[in-house]
Image (cartoon, rainbow, N blue to C red):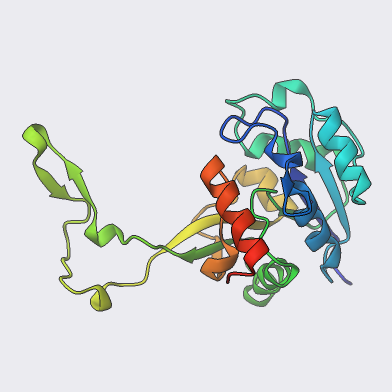
Length: 227
């Protein structure tokens, strides 16, 4: 039997880094629309819903065909609300699904192929959770902490690499796709444990919009077709 998969797009109104970013125009449509449209192209997602407390975001999401079955409680839309809490709230409000896919609207370059690739990997490996990652642009093997009197101390002290080509590949969460079995997520209350596997996305699809500079750069990339 084909598993039932619920996609959640979380979008609260109180963005600080880029005010009202979720409904701000990116190229020719609101930021959130790019994620809604890619989710709807997925061949695995059964249902896509928005979780938001903001009436304007809700209206925009509906215009682009996203379901909004409830309004997120205000206590789950605060600056200090742990990111997993709105997800678990959705799970309670929308029972009957086998898997959850979390798609943050701040990753507008993520494609439906990335979404489906992450889902396929979790099926292939029979894992309880899979998250998207990209190759880190800065290696922790070349990072330092600063001690007293500005003395540098290697972050990782077990090995030293003098040439970039010798550095081990390291990966960073890119925030684009999170997938997990519902029962497992309800138990663990996180997508990241030692059971979680990683789906490698290209750097060009991994841009996460957190600042005004990120937004402007993403807009430029999309207008110019830069990969």
